[in-house]
Length: 179
Image (cartoon, rainbow, N blue to C red):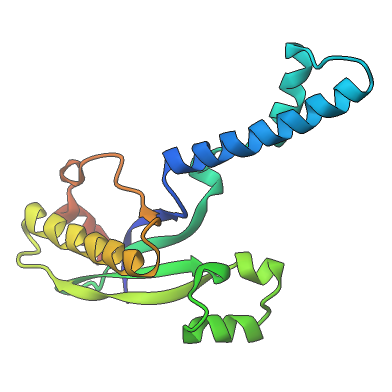
């Protein structure tokens, strides 16, 4: 039995890289639209440029570039553990999970499905009654997950927490999870 604590998204690339790539694609798309309009003898006004931009520009990074998740769990004992989940198309081709996924429906839909990939080694919690000790264990799991993912692809990013973990009373959370 495990108590799920936190789930962090894994991004294919950084926010900056994502929008730099989107800007390059948008520039090419806009050029194509302008060329099409100029063939008709009409120039593409600023007002007309907004329509293709609304249709063709990249969707928001925080929702669209996710390739998987790092899930942090407590084993309801003295360890925190983590699991990495990835879309099938991002699991390395030589990995046994990829081969299984390919035989279990490696279609476009299957490639976008998220599969369990790897377990992150358990981390011992020094003192379950000390919030700092629990936070250290959680941070260790996240760092191990980041390291595992960097070995697969150095561009992948595990989103950091949007808050400090000491703002959560994990001692209280642990008590609630054991009820």
